[in-house]
Length: 627
Image (cartoon, rainbow, N blue to C red; front, side):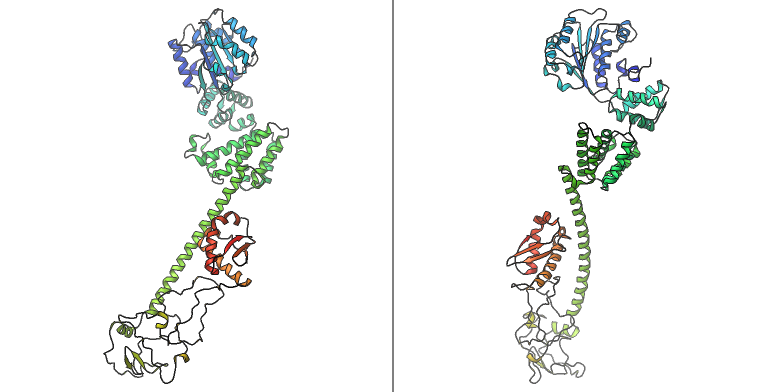
């Protein structure tokens, strides 16, 4: 009769046990040094070698010719234990014999000495299934057993054992067997079974087995039933799973929020007899890999995959944020839990796909965090774009200011005669007659530092305005000597009130005007060109661009536009969120209306900047609120 591989290739010595060196070496030393405990507890996940090690230990302590702590498997005791003819080694299934009566019978039998072997060994598998009464009946015997009794307890759920039992046993925790150890064992079995298995297929079997050697050998046995040359395709067919392409296709649909594509893929997999629970589990593991790639510096040390698959996973991980991955994994975990308790498993899977592709349809907290993270990414992008735009504007502005400064310097810089006047006291110097070379149309005589000059004399300043510059600049020094307070003398009865001011294309000002050059408004600064100038009155400039009195709706709209421009310049996060808004203006309140949904979220952060711009543009401090 054919024996399945996991029974045929069950380890017979401690050397054959894969992936548990910390346990096998300890047990070998105890046997070799004759330091045996009266009770052992083997715990760990399924298929990790608990029962196999229990049988090897029972043979090793009773073997007639042990070899460095290992049984010889040649003596009659070893062979008798393997074929079940030696009755001194008793294996009990606690799932079937879990009552107090079974434990009482075991306790009565333990009083008898072994018939053939040196020790009577009781292997109680799945010991956590015993009842409380059975545990209590076992306590006294387990604490003080006869010298010829050894108990070996095995369980997958050690947390269900009473602490009184745990404290009386020597505990050994079996780890999940590593992928490399499973691959090595599969190749050894394949070689002895005259079969072939490639590395990728062996690694895939190891990942599906999830650290259990028995599951790996069972799946390998099914693969050999399909073909003696085991490949990835054979493994996927035997395990009932498809290639990883569908995982990447679903991930692409999640990125594009394409629920239609995701449901089509689920329908195709369902028609191919793909289990929906297994599909959700595979997706969860797939996004776990993406999460590890985004969180760990060297993910290849944790993930079990080929180099090509790792490269594809790294590229895919860049398309998801950490919050999105966590949200997707939470949705899939909830779907798996619901699938186990519902009859229509496909509906639960399809609901999960729609929730992932439509975050707004999910009320899960992780989905809300994912949506907030998406908004934060958009805000960061807008900030970068705004910063780049402001930098470009500043560069253009600095170039323009530099050109304007150069032009102003040229305009302010006087000619060489003016330089002479600026640096030399001309009060005692007589000038030659250069009549006809320079002619001034507005006056025939000038007084400079108390000296009268003829109309043929060279004018001191070239192309200067006809009014006294001191009236604007308040006795500004143009040279080392202060300019005299005496006014120019005009010819005849011509008076200053009758003379229109004459300006160059660019008036000469040492300082910037009192109003904001960048303020965009239809209202021109108040400057009456036809207004007469008295001897001591400067030109009238209105420093306040907006009256503090009643503002019309049209003016308010224009001022609000200027306010938006100023606010966006000083606070980049506002860019784009105030465009298209309207306002209503009362005595001391400015109400913003027709705004986008994002503005209420960022308004507490930018309210101060908007108020500053409103105060600057409207000319007074207003209360700003959302309508």
